[in-house]
Length: 536
Image (cartoon, rainbow, N blue to C red):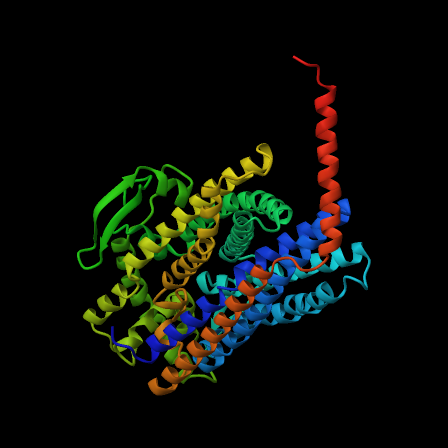
């Protein structure tokens, strides 16, 4: 692959985004788990739950700080590497990001300090409120970011202004309640809850294998398994909602995920596995499950899902319509003071396809001068590379069902087997710790790579979005970001491992005394029950 300014800019943003997302899901999930643990402490007044809250809260704090550091640097790239994108759609995209900074980030940043330093200064109920505000702020922050991202996937509530040559917001509530954005939000935060649950279970399983912090570990696994099981089911169900939304707003992405080259008779089957061949436009050795894709994508037995070849033909039609819109736009711009009403009417009729004309900018400066071969080439560009999407999606789904099975078994052992777990299962829990991060990164790859060749789907091609930088400048900043983020990742891993090895170090004597009294009470109750039972 030949790397130009567009490819290097995409690589840089992909690298920084995926680095950043190593921290985000754990922050989302741990904030809720810590709040649940403190809620139990306030309700029961048992010191073990306060110790659990402080211990897992410490790991949350480390992850939170590193996530903020990587997130801030990532946002600088919108102006640095993607200046035309920022100019073209900044009125829409910037609004949710600004609200996220003002409303959500300040909320969590303010109260996270009170969480760590307010234990002896606030009442138990007041501190619990602080903890929940941190959790709400963390998840609220994700909401506004995903609203911005969801608009890029499904650009509703906005229109192009020929006078300013920019997209402008026309309906804030359409942007806010965008179906794609809402589906992405609930799916992403649920994935974060699974990530935190697997992390808590894995670390606790390691403690049990080492015979350390038994009481904390057993209770942590119980909370993690119950919360994680609900979250894992939610991820699968809400993933189905994302597939249904894609049927209406991102048909090409859905067809590429399925390697569906031809439109199938309704209801479409689901390719369980196969080997997509982009040149031949067929999938070799495909194993199909009848009806499943039709039910997921359309929730009916009679609605077709268009295949890639049909969508390419539709793209050709939209490119030709876009050329008409572009021609009318040029006339409007030339007669800026008194535009011809006829040209304005033509533009309004075809303006929805203007972005497709911009696809021709890759081949010719003026889309009106495009040849038939260039139109065909531009329509073929609307097909993303299929095989990485196909396999990334299946890896994500397989891991998702694996989480459900593991969580269900651990929940069963916690609920009906006295929180006793076989050693092989504990080792499996430890080995599984990286798995939710792999699933999350696969999910983001499917979401963002599947949108290509668009930065804003159907509106602005990626090739037009970049800044006027040299390859050397982007390569140097890419190397700098890689070095900076790698250092941060090493720091994160070092701190997390240090505190995991150290274990719970706060409220130790009080918790140990309570555990001893608690075990004595259980032993006394067991002895009393044994005496009360008649001899056989």
